Image (cartoon, rainbow, N blue to C red; front, top):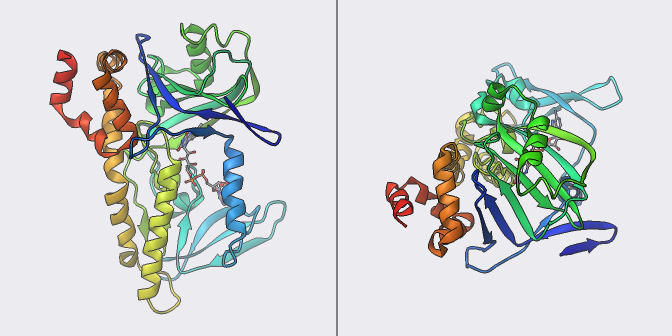
Length: 354
Ligand SMILES: Cc1cc2nc3c(=O)[nH]c(=O)nc-3n(C[C@H](O)[C@H](O)[C@H](O)COP(=O)(O)OP(=O)(O)OC[C@H]3O[C@@H](n4cnc5c(N)ncnc54)[C@H](O)[C@@H]3O)c2cc1C
């Protein structure tokens, strides 16, 4: 089914499928915390970002300055961060903005993080992702398709229906594995599609619209310092992406909210107009540890388990055949607590014996 919004077409999705390295496939419906089925949309990122951005622009107490890449943070005489400087695009004029706290929300290649001198993330904690839009894919349905393929593990290849016969297709592969495989991810993706029994035929008449784009995705399995004298980092700049699914939008939004709460409290308690002291922002880090970190820890465990091909085949194969194991999948998607299942050796024993 396709939803039309004016000129735009969006895919609508109600199910997630996972295909194991041995070709076994399990499909599970999207269910919310109350067990109700729901649908999701596959929408181009530039459209969803514009929805958020346009909403921000209408807020009376927010001033938006566009086309102004921040180059670095500025510091006061004590070394505390007290602002940012940058240059408006298309101009040579350098501008500096002063503030009591700088929030680095500038993504995986954060200029704020870099200028703070924070260390680069080790390659074992970064996904290299490539994504493109294919036209002419056959067999698309209301399903998000994930393929665990030997050449991509512990990452995966995804096919998301975008309406009609268009699909968002990509792979996320650990950068450390990519370095060892000595192949460009575009090549790995093309070869994986061509060789996969469930994909080759469906992509035979398909072509890529535009070009293949690539990014680095900073996994939350790497614990990064997220606050200091006069600064906090949120979202990808704080390295908060789920290390199993590669999803980072939810944690970016959540960390933004937690940072706003901590900053609000610190501003109400700290008199003066100087940079907020690090200790006044420590609540932000604590709230990340309480609200976001536990799920990241479980997802990292899941990511490492997917390296064990035998276990992945076993889990997906059993889930395909057995409703009670399939239910574990459904529960893991709708509740963070259910992800803890993967910690229990008993679960694997049950899997083997079921
Ligand atoms: C191919 C791919 C697929 C993904 N799929 C999913 C998915 O299905 N679900 C999901 O949840 N997550 C997904 N993610 C991860 C997700 O995109 C990120 O985790 C999320 O966007 C992080 O949000 P953010 O606001 O921290 O950073 P970003 O979304 O990267 O936003 C950073 C913003 O800062 C701006 N900026 C950067 N540098 C500067 C500067 N120097 N000065 C001023 N502004 C600057 C950028 O223009 C951008 O607007 C995917 C990532 C990739 C690469």
